[in-house]
Length: 328
Image (cartoon, rainbow, N blue to C red; front, side, top):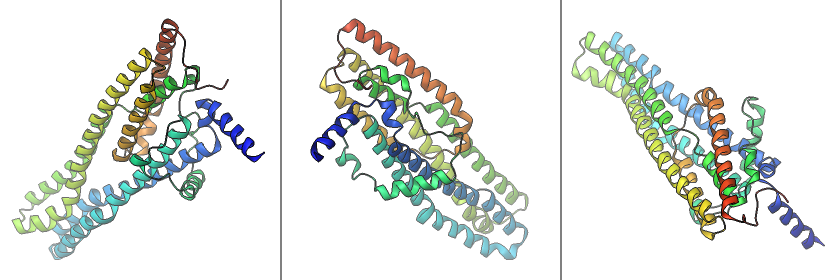
């Protein structure tokens, strides 16, 4: 009896639509957990920028105006570099990787893909998911709903095509916006450094004083500014390449929707989406909130266009695959 019950449960799970699967409690828990992890990483990034930008500039000016504080200003700059290299940056990276792992678990279940242990490693511990989901729900933003992560319209397509539409939705963030964001962040930090340098020149500091009270305290600002500039531009370039890969997979799927290569392409594309999530630099929530409505509208429009294109191709090309994303 138990074996029959489990088999029936598995068949029911497979027959569920993407829309139904993504709104199961365990999937919403995973989305809440990954959001909490990203939020924790962004808080660290905020502290990192505060310490390396305005506060570093303030200590540099302090050293210029009160020469007796110069040794302490230099020590602060050295301490900040150590803090950045040994904890702030590595901790952000770890939180980002855990969030990407949990989101991969969500995608694999919802889109009915195989877990790629060779690429991703072990599944995230359920204790971690539960802990982070609970932390998120205690501070949940009502303007950031977790339900209906992917457009519901995909349920009208066979599963292999619906899956590709959802994967394409993961690439909605525009590369040009990342490049603009990188330029803005790097520009602000560079402006702070230039203001401090201008003050140093105005006060006619010696070269040794410049090194002690300007270069050392502001070196973390230069590091973070360069890091933000390069990482966001690299992420934008990778996003553009991912879109091209998704477009090729989509064209092949429309041409031969029943071919085994469609599922293989989807798994390969998911590998690259996971890599991008692990490596993408963080963007502050206020930027996402400002652009959310625009992104959601673009994603919905793109999904509707892809679904319409697929339906035309299926009608003109003959029978659709037997396995569908929606329940029978």
